[in-house]
Length: 590
Image (cartoon, rainbow, N blue to C red; front, side):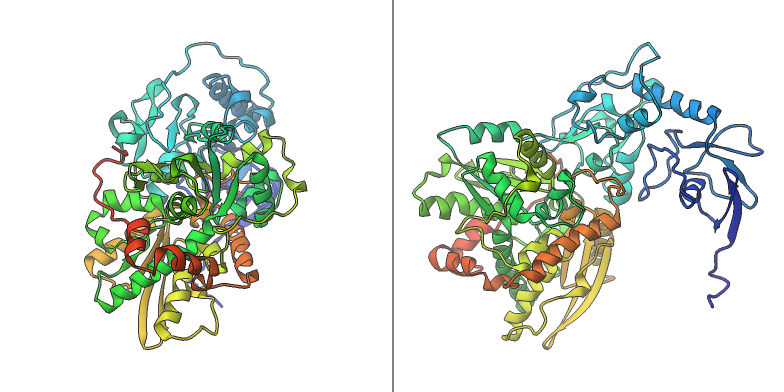
C-alpha cells in the first residue's frame, strides 16, 4: 500500500451529466478527455505551461456566472461542468470567427494549409464566412534569419512559441511586445531574428498552430539546380529522415522508409544519393580518437559532442567558457559535404564548383550551419542547400510521386555504406552509444560481447550514467532540449559533477524531434514522448537489423582512410573534418 502522505485525493464531479472520479489537481479539460469529451483548444499544449489566452476551451461551471477556461481550471469536489450548449458553442464560434477575421485570407497558398489548427477548428465549428469587418493587423514579413521566418500577421497570440523557447529550450528569445491591438510576438525590443539570441532550433515552428513561424525555404534553389545541365546534384539524407518521412504519406509513426526515400530522391532527379550515416560513422572514428586522447592527456574534460547545430549556437552564445570542451569534429552533414567536394570530386574527375550538394535534414538550424564561414573550401560552401523533411515531403508530392508504391532503392557508393551505430545518431543518446561501441573496443583492445548501451538511451530530457570499460570508469550524461543542457553545464561550471562525456541535442528527443520534421499525424502532438519513442524505435530497429553495427567496421570508411584521409585524428582529417568554435555575441552569420 502506498504511503498515505504521497497519495493524491480523489475528486468526484459531474461533466455533462456523467459522474467521474479523477485525481486532485486534474484540469477540467483532462477530466473531460477521460470520458470521451474533446474540448476544443488553441493555446493549450500538454508539454507547456498553461496560458489560457485563446479562450476557445471555455465551459460552464454551476455556480459561476461567467465561462471558465477548462485548460486552467482544476476540478473540485461536487463540481458540475457543462461543456456543450448552444450558448457555449456560439461563444466559442465567436472567438474563432474573430481570430479568422483578423487573419490573412490565403489558406490555399499557406504553408500550413491542411495542417493549420486554426483552419481545422474553424471548419469543425462551422465557420463558413467572415462576419466582422474592420481594420486587420498588418506586419511586414521578417525573414532576416537564414533558418526561421516570422510572419506576425498569422500569429494568433497563443503564446506557444515563447513558452517552448523559454520552458523547453531555455533561450527566452521571444515574448509579447506592446499591448492590445498592437501586441506582437518578437525578440526583445522588436529585433530581427538574425540580430537576436535565437539558436535557430525551429521549435517555435513546430508548436505554432498556424504559420506565424516557418523555415526558410530552399526548395526553389534545389529545383533550379536539378534542372541545370551544368550541375551534378548530389543529395545526402540524415538518419532521422527515414524514421519520419513516411508520416507525410500516411504511414504509422515509427515506420522506417529508407528504401522508398532513396527511390523518391532518384525520381526527383538527383544525380547521386548518399547517406549521411556514412559520415556519422566517420564522425565516430574521429570523435572516439579525440575522446581517448583527452582521457590520456587529462582533458579538457568533459568531452562535449558537437553534432547538433542548434546546440552549438547555444553554447557559443550562452556558455562560451566551455567551448574548449566541445569536440572539434564537424557535424556528419558537413563532413559528408566536404568529402563530396574533395574526395568524391577527385575520384570522379569533377570540378568541386560543378557539384551541388543538397542535405535533407530534420533540423532548420542546419540551414544556419551551411552558411558558417568555418565550413568552406577556399571560400566555397560545401553544402549548397538544406531541405527539411517537410520540404522534401512537399517536393515528392509536387512531383506526383506515389511514395507508397515505390520500390526499395539503395544508396550510391562510395559514400552510401553505413553501420547500425550511425543510424542511431538520429535519437537522443545515439551519438554517445555509437561512440562507446568504438571507444570501448579501442580501449579494451577486444570486441564487445554486447554492443547495446541501453543506459544512455533516453527519450526523456536528461539522463546520467556511470559506465565501466575495463579499468576505466566513465561518468556520462545525455541531454535533449536546451533547458536540460543548461542543467548539465551549470553542474560542470559549479564543480558539482565531474563528467567524462556529455551528449547534447538541441531538440526534444534528439533529431527525431527536430524543427523540420513532419507535423504530427492525428492522435499525436509536437513534443509528444510517444511520437518520439516511435521514431526512435524505427532507428533502433534499423540498427538491430544491420549486419555491421560498429562504426570502425564500416569498410567504406576504412577504405576512405586508406585512400585519402590517412588515419583518425591525422593531418588530413584535421584539415577537412575538424573545426573550432568561438563565442558569438550575436547569432547572425555576419
